Figure 1 (cartoon, helix red, strand yellow):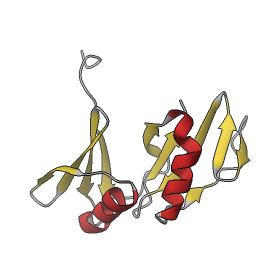
Figure 2 (cartoon, rainbow, N blue to C red; figure 1 turned 90 degrees about the vertical axis):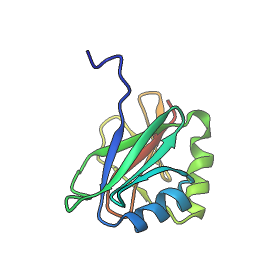
Figure 3 (cartoon, helix red, strand yellow; figure 1 turned 135 degrees about the horizontal axis):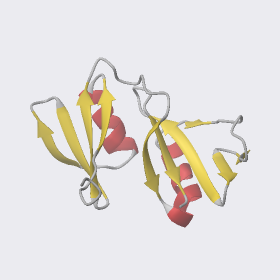
Figure 4 (cartoon, one colour; figure 1 turned 30 degrees about the vertical axis):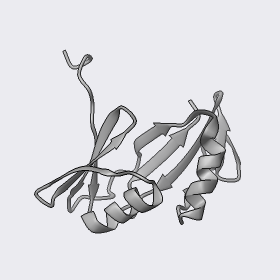
Length: 126
């Protein structure tokens, strides 16, 4: 039933203006739409994701949104760092090792970071 429909990631944020600065300035997204000053829609490749105002922003303790970036992972990590993005280090993950800000294991590379509200985001090599 739903397997043929597009999914949309939705992230809660406390302040839309602060979140927009991060998603547009640091990550480079352009707004697709703003709905009632409560929701911003961004396009990411062939998909979209939403950020919306919520008092529950940042309460998820797991990865909320991922981007598959292929071989560009290390270059993207470095570019994001120049824009002030700080990467998370999870040294307790079984089967993974860390080289700088990049975690390696299971045939992939992963780097995690947070938005201003603490939503956990990541980029993965594939």
